[in-house]
Image (cartoon, rainbow, N blue to C red; front, side, top):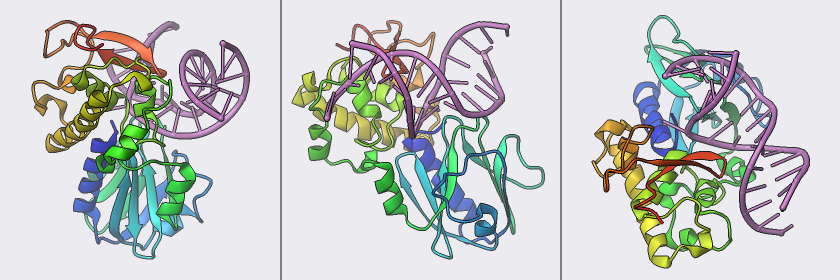
Length: 255
DNA sequence: CTCCATGTTTAGAA
DNA sequence: CTTCTAAACATGGA
């Protein structure tokens, strides 16, 4: 489920339920541990408390009381879940705490975790761009230089961190730009529109707790999918592979 | 059984 | 050098 708004929602939920509590026990099983992770992850978590958090795009970092950070990437299908007794299905990371145990579930195992001592050097090594909610106008506009398709640009995490397949489609739909258009052919006015559409889509989703049915009526995300229709012209969605991802767009409202 | 999936990384082809 | 495509990763759900 996770793009930027989903991960931010996860962050808030985790901090709301786990901040300050002692991790009495930790179990890691069945999720990829990054090679740059320091030490044994279970031992690193046991006895620690979560005292802070950071997020860059789809990457979540939970600060531990010894100065280390627990990095979580949810991949295509990950999510956190608090539980009392039985660990939920697909739990690959279990944190037992004084009250309200926390599981990170990865049904498809695409995702990763790590214990890090420095978040900024990790992000720099990964080449992550600025978080989509903090992207300034100059940086945003400068990205539209090359000939690559605008969709592949929006999905490039070294350009902007946090926009994924669904929110990229939403921005393009709101702006009336086809995903296949070369980035350098997008006008300055359209780039401005893309920028404001990005912020709006992310913030509307956050305000709706990432529950798409609660989104405003003009948004694609509310009705994206087979059988859905363009809110503006009521026409059916067109579907095509762009930048390797399934893209939805309205052939009559986007050009 | 077949196909698809809100992500990332990498190899190989234009 | 830039850009794109396909594949790999792993597996549930339609």
